[in-house]
View 1: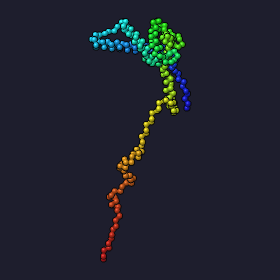
View 2: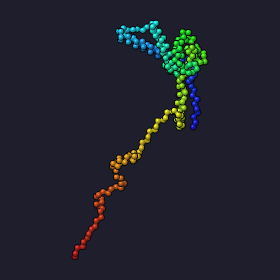
View 3: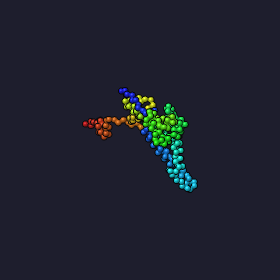
View 4: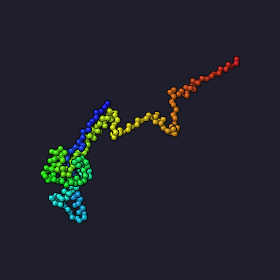
Length: 238
């Protein structure tokens, strides 16, 4: 029985759309804000332990705003320079590459992070290219010479898994790289086989039971009663 070849449909290598990029940014914004808040709380606790004075951070404070902007720049810039993706982009399966598809270098990654706020300062017009352009490149992508593509081949991996399961079900050998099937459990041998497969030393010391006869043993009284006897008759004189 032959199995038709399944052509794996995949988005890997294609330009990422607006929904995936927006959801990735929402995840990154939540993660980076949470980490920044924990950092401020740790600094306040450390100052309180050392000096005994409590430090409160106000969101409207200019110092806090500058620290948050620097933290956002480092968060996105370092993530793109290190692996081409942030935490949210890794969850959504997208990554930043150069315009020609090669791996993005640290210089372009930090430049993209630096000009990223321009798309917000222009009332969101910097993101218009994601909707109308064929390559879905925003303003920060055009300046830094980058693009955002899908890099998570989840659909193709799922189809390959189903194809391997179908081949195993019809008895065909799985393709190279597939996980081997678990070994079958050995069947329990019979008692006679277990007894004969023991070592000779164990078999020699085992007691041997005599075979039982199918004939019933004759009672001792019956044998004595039916034992043949000889009667001597002597003739008396006269």
